[in-house]
Image (cartoon, rainbow, N blue to C red; front, side, top):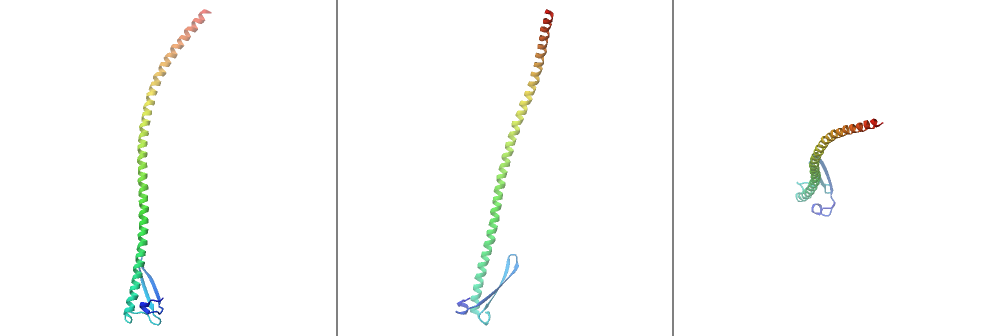
Length: 152
């Protein structure tokens, strides 16, 4: 490339090597070949400082980009967690509502059981009355039948 602040209008070959230090760090090594000699701080202090500035700006930009990417990933995780929290809250509301509905159903069934028990007791009383009526009617039929037989 051509960087006039380093090598006027002559081209420069730039080589870079990136090494992973750990999960959050990398090491960048850059060499500037000026066409027969490499840029060094001892021989070309002004040009070296310009190259250092370019590399530093590159490092800052790539670091910011990486951090922005990490922030976005963390924001996405946060958004997913917030969605899950909202889902859990909705589920809690449905469960609470279900509990209330079931409590009401229990009360309704208790009332139905009470009514059925009352109806069962009334039915037993009605059965006893009906048995007495049947017994009386049976006696009436037998009396009429006896009268009928007496007439023959």
